[in-house]
Length: 164
Length: 357
Image (cartoon, rainbow over the protein chains, first blue to last red):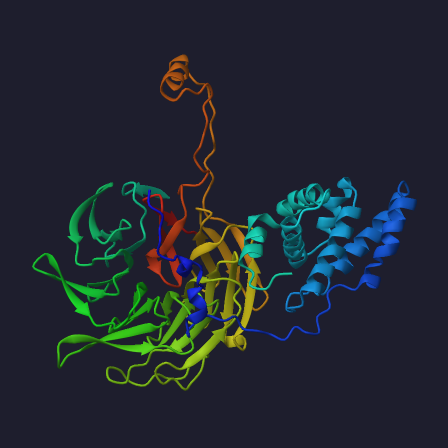
């Protein structure tokens, strides 16, 4: 078969960039969004608590619930700063991993509708870059979040123009 | 509830004649088929084949008995029945992209056409030159217009579009009608005036519907949500996110009750009682009780022989429709008290639903 001798670089051109009627999302200033506050999550203490108080259930549970609520506050949706988004994602992942499998369902129940939607957004963000244990943990959270939010919750992750 | 299957092709759109004995459907092609009801069967009596592109919208005006069709070939035709044959008249819509939806106004003196050209074409008949003219509404639409609905006052037009916005425009054409009076949506209404713009609906707005009085506007968007804007309460918008797949069509069945259906293949009923009070009521479809029953030995071997399966596997969905519902339409009853409505879906079936208030 003869090789195509004519250049095919045109296939890599993004035509939409040259369209003057290109659709642009409405931009809202998100520069002051910093994402969840690490201290507020009590994250470092929560992790230590899990290890030290591993078999002392009530306290441990309380801290983790609080940590979950706190880490889902102030999601960095509007900011363009990738570092803020990465940091937020890392924090959320830490909190999610700190939960015991049996507590995941209670954690999901403690969230309201918007919280479940936000949690699902973070779960899928976490799926994008899997590390050793993250996918397994995220899958467990995904199962519980799905039963709470339904497929609509996942559809909203896909249709959201602003992502965490 | 009754189901009638029009074949295997998906039904993109449908419209009923005034007495509901005839239905115009398009089997996802460039043709419109008109069927006549004969006892329990539907017999095809006409085929309208003027379009060269896939038909995207059909509307049948009950009083004047005219059908308007629009297609992806950037054209719209108005069909009138002459001596038992439907004759088309081309409408100059002047769009350079496919038409997506079309709706007659309540008084049937004009119709609105949405298109992928980021504009709405409002068309009216000009008697002097004996042709259909169009006026365009362009600003501030930024993407394809996916759905349209007229306000009962024949002047206001709601449009849902793919730029994630839901808008209400004025479609007052001074050549053919008198100036409209004020409404809760606004009082200054020159042609193309924007009376409501709700941004960030969360997803493409697939379908819009005015309430029977016109004081509220409901729409469904692709983020699996249903929203209602209330003119009497300062145009406040209430949104309800659902756990279902996105809804594609919405219909008001009374002043407070709304029915919507979509990719979940069955209609859902919602209720709107005021700002912040939009809630899911129930599924309109009663799920089919899967009766496993006792299979006779004959059935068992027949299954084995024909399908090579040892157990009876039910691959049907629990709902009447087996694929996404594309359009809902009022069948019987006034807009304020709908008794029956119809749905068509991608499975080629049309179902008539009863609604009890």
